[in-house]
Image (cartoon, rainbow, N blue to C red; front, side, top):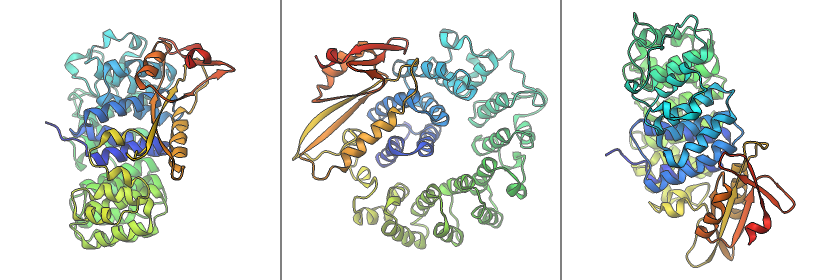
Length: 473
């Protein structure tokens, strides 16, 4: 049986998706996708809660990268019954964006077990893009690969990127690019491609593909400072994870800690999450003290906590950080799981940041309720109905939900606790069922409307008018 993502890590990911800015949301969605690729999975009730949360974001969020990673996450654990409609609507709303379309194709292919011919929404998608995207999580034997001929000298960079993603995910067929050359040889050659994104994904392939190694890297580490920040980020992550010679690795990590791009330094810090060797603290502790990017500091704090049993100075530094920078305690606790430091951090907890999420054990019902509930207080139920019809202007419904949770959290000594449940992309034929099932004392609507009129969705995702009196009745 595959291992379960821990309750603390689950809580952290949920908090980041609900409360973080676009970059933090994207990073959390990337982490979920990575954990699933590594064989981990969410508990059933957590998975259902994440599915509902992400379904709402994929239609309502304005950031294209967040939408794409929502789709990539649904491709890992989304269900056909629960997600198909949301994925298809997201693809329709972003039909001019090949990256989002490809992510939607991959998600639908997984949900339909590779039966692309059964998915009406895919019939207008370019055949090459459709097959390459489906290969990300579908057995190639279920796909028609007869027209899969990719000339790296003439192919569009988007096609090359999709092919490299397939290689990186270990879903490629051998000689995908050329019948005469192994995929590793082509990945190495694409490291010199003129397109920055293609070069970035060639490095990512070496990080992710089990059959590739640093020997297949097409960019020497000596060229690090001459690369754009997106390529630097992947090069530094690869160096931190895979360079075996400690002297060489130490040199690249030291250089990387001084690069000007926060994106590149984030890549380096991410690579250090699973790497420690004697003497590394000579770089990391001093780097933490001068680092100005909060995300980099968070990753470094997680690294220090994760290897605190191996390096006493790390344990001391982590405790100092917990006192001086309480907003990083959640990252420290995340890294400290299964270490002696974890108990010390818990013992010193002052309830700042998201620490309460890490102190509730496996009580996922409370974790996903959105508002911590004390049994001695009476509770009220609030139901937030959200709708963003595809024929209306896009809204930041996830931001409104976050603001509502934040306002409730800021109420000091409330006489009643408010339990908030969310329903996203609500259709007119769901209204009565949702209200009857939840039985809320408070009904909140987020979306489009006018005096006495609210716009929900019909079966195609377009606007359907409902009078406020009908809902109240």
